[in-house]
Image (cartoon, rainbow, N blue to C red):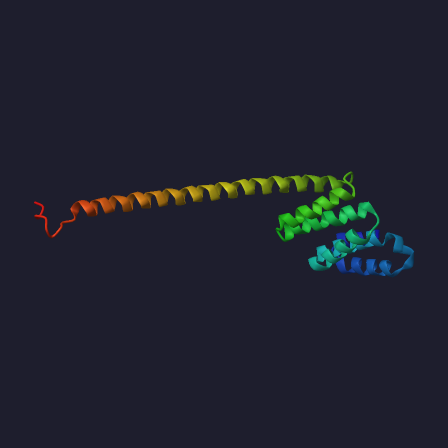
Length: 171
């Protein structure tokens, strides 16, 4: 496992992934499969293969009985959705799942902060949207009122300037 991480640091991502794939096949390491999959997912991230990284993180998050691995997998998925996909609602969902796993881990603590930050941002955006909608509604009402006033005024003007055939011309 450490050899793969060293390979990643040396920018030899494929070597690290190959090593981890071999470990994942060995029955001796089945009790560490979640940790191996997390390391493999990280390698796929480094290689730019986010869909494959997501698959592995999801697998660890859904199948692992180890809360630490579940926390790390959900946290990493949150990071992917926040920074790579710019999908804050989904990122928050993953951060919330990470918090439920093990909040005492660094990833759990950071997930808590990120989830809170996204919630604050969503609240601000919601208030701004409500303010924009209220302003637009007030503007439309003001325009409608102005149109009513203008149309009533023109009717009055038309009525005052109207001449009947039976009336003498205005001078």
